[in-house]
Amino acid sequence: MITRFYLLTTLLFFFTKSYSQIIVMDINNKPIPFVEVLSSNKHFYTQTNLNGEINWADLKNLKNGDTLFFQLITYERISIPFADLSSSDTIRLKERVHQLQEFSVVSNTKKYKFQILNACYRSYQVNDDSVAYYIDGKVGYLSKIGKDKYDLLLKENRVLENKEIDEQTLDRKISIGLKPSIPRPPLGYLPFNFYKKGGFIYHSNDSSIVKTIDQESIQLGRIEYNEKHVKINFNDSSFNGTNNMLKSEIKREKREITLIFKNSKELDFESTKTFDHLIYYRDYREYSIKHNKDEEYTRIIQIDELFIEDVTYTKSIDKDIYSSSWRQNNSNYISEFWNNCNCEIYQTPNKYLLKNLHEK
Image 1 (cartoon, one colour):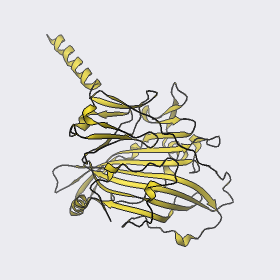
Image 2 (spheres, rainbow, N blue to C red):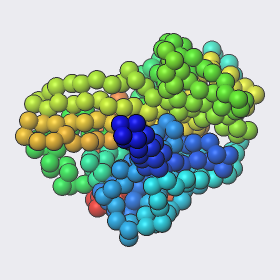
Image 3 (tube, helix red, strand yellow):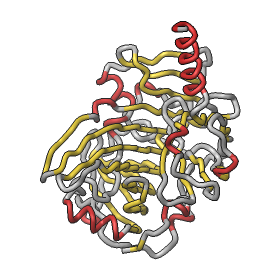
Image 4 (cartoon, rainbow, N blue to C red):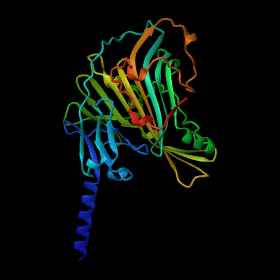
């Protein structure tokens, strides 16, 4: 009897574990990590894990009339009615076809003093599955070559907010450090600067186009190669920790980084320490925040994205047009730049991401 009970329990665990999650794959049956999953239901947001999986329990609050949207910058966005999904479905995404733009890199920067990055950006925050704010714009970054300090030229910007959530966070004063700001160039996350410093190891898989990133025998990410791009996804475990401030407890739960580079003969990826080939950067951060007025933690997700248009070098520059301020307060734009960003892999925002937001 005991043996039968143990066997039945084991079988139930196996089937529950095996059939209680959706997996997102590419057309070659490789799992796709960090795919964003949005819904026509405003109270929903999640993403796939490192193995391309979504736990079916994360979808429990959706209704049959809702539609799910699967999107990642290098893949075609698709929509699927929730009623058509089962807990064991496999979703397949096709790679987006990008028209490669003319690309030039200054190989010898010693005779130049400044570096300029021109880019489009976006940043948004999700509080318990409701979008709290959304900002985007066009920007120029200026730095001295070899320095991790940037000044800003804000060309156009848009600011959207959820007024109800904004009032709640002001009341509890838990929004410190979590207010919208323009993403900074990820100098510290370039492969040479971050991986060599952290003692990471690259392992080749059976396929020559995929490598895993490991530290102390724990897989933290992967590198994928194709003819046009080199894409890297990884978890930054050094981000995790807890802070207490102004009667609030802030747990830093997770940080996931995505970098996409142009693949070319000049790219020595593992020793890359400049932005010359970078065309996309995504920073996903997840927090749990609790004020002493609250009974439960608020789950906060912040996502920053940079779409690099070009990188140039110069001997001199008019520094007066650049600023050290990084905050966005109000919208200031003269064109719908979000529909015509001149960046290679830019993707316009999903309209469901912007539901119930008001422009400032």
